[in-house]
Length: 330
Image 1 (cartoon, rainbow, N blue to C red):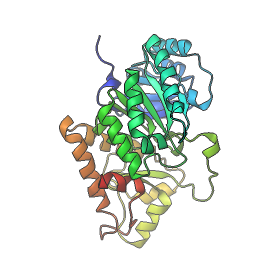
Image 2 (spheres, helix red, strand yellow):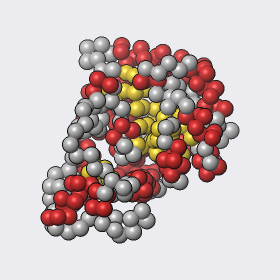
Image 3 (cartoon, rainbow, N blue to C red):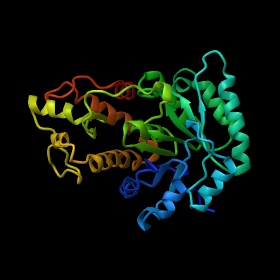
């Protein structure tokens, strides 16, 4: 039997079950598609032929408190033709004083995963990655199963140097490790030895924040765009401000064909194609390199992006955000 596509170097876009049109569009990119939600297998079976020929992963979001029976959930995924079966998912909250919170969670999931021949799925507080990376590594290694991690944080799970260093260590040492429901930083994880990165296109699908951590959203609601040259996300309103101050910001990828990005200020102009193309271009560039070159290429690309901040290239942001800065300095 051949190895599942998503257990070797690969990436997908992470899309909710409630957005079948977006699932169809995202399936045109990457090596697979990841569908979130308990109805994901049904949605995939009803999708077009173009979607159903794409390898698929299903995130049942059990870490959100959804009650999914592991055996029935595994059967539903297999019936839909999943590339591999994922457990429903368990939330691992941070406990600085009691490591058994982590070890007990992994132990319980390991038993089920062995019985069902499934991948362990953990939504894990990023403080385990940042502050207890060695413990987390040893615990995941003890499972002897493929692991999928959903980073959990109220803002950016990779927003500190410690978190970036921890992720690099995990991906370098834990076999068959995937990062789901993440941003472009997951590509860095695969560059360092992980097997699969699944990236979201919205704030809520680029990381998971438990309900208690969800902030109120006010003010600027303009489209968020992934800028390939800056390797980060910015609002259309911010980009328009840069344009007003100097050189227009354009995109040369097929989604935009050299057009100016301030057009996304118009709520009628959908940013999805731009974000799909720009993220996929970045992922293809890094993951298409020789395995021994991917990590250094990723870091070099991040450093080149950092050097574009605060220069005469255009009157944009002067300082990179924390995650990009951490990757560049690592």
